[in-house]
Length: 184
Image 1 (cartoon, helix red, strand yellow):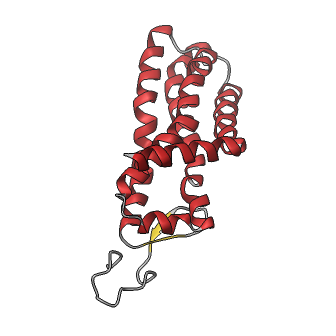
Image 2: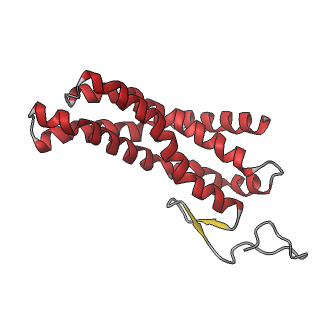
């Protein structure tokens, strides 16, 4: 369990050292939701009908905007290869990365959601449902988007720049004994 704490702490330190990676998704979230009433009009009845959907979609897009940075730094400095070769289960490393990413990006989105919901004239009785669903949905979204990457990392994976993980055949050499961990 020390690997989870160490990875979690490392990811939080990296996130707070580059605040732009934290602020960009939040600013996108605020700007996109704020511009929506300008595009569709200021009719409060219509805005209250679409408020939850607009907030949900922009929250998910904001989270997706920041997902490329989760493994990018590790890939660029070579520590991703070290994590793959470590004796620790890759599951725990990816879990710590996902949790820290959600705390840095997802939780602030959930905290900002009620303010933006009131701007969009969401009824007060719908606010707990919106916040609860965002509390559940944003970490699940991060897990679904990155668990595929984590599974590929456990097998045979090549990270292509910033775009994320893509399985690549033949990019890892097979061990002389033929029982490589990265074998297809």
